[in-house]
Image 1 (cartoon, rainbow, N blue to C red):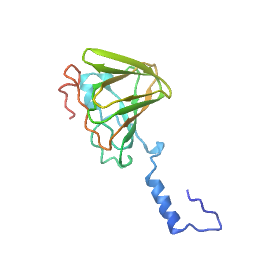
Image 2 (cartoon, rainbow, N blue to C red):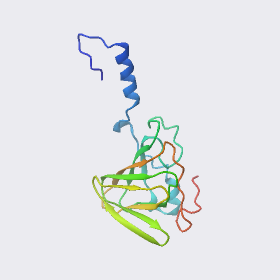
Image 3 (cartoon, rainbow, N blue to C red):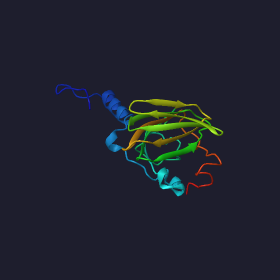
Image 4 (cartoon, rainbow, N blue to C red):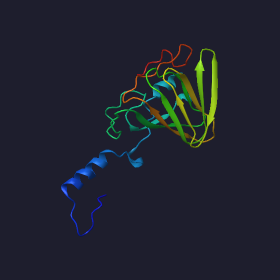
Length: 175
């Protein structure tokens, strides 16, 4: 909304700034839960059902260039992920970017993997984990309510993640 008063008309510069700032905003009421973007993973089981809510870019879930609600990514992506109770994000690796999870609601168990070894941490409200590129990770909602968390990836268009041979996702196509 313009900062003008009843006594002053907005200038052309003010009108341009108003349009620019509108192009920089992604408001909550214009977001939607995209349950389809990772729906291919439910071929491995219903526990992999989750929704992405895009704000900046596509994240690591694929090409969503047609989603006009998401702001264009320049240096990173930013989305929310919604996991129902018991839902999981399978073990995967982003080879090209670091990834951060910041919990807004619920309880999220995040695990990093290396060969047969793993380590887990329980994250709750306002907890964060930053996972370096090349580190295998998985996550699971261990609470009784939905888990909602921010997902940030450190590139404007990250490569799709890879799944290890022992993952339930190995060999599952995105179609």
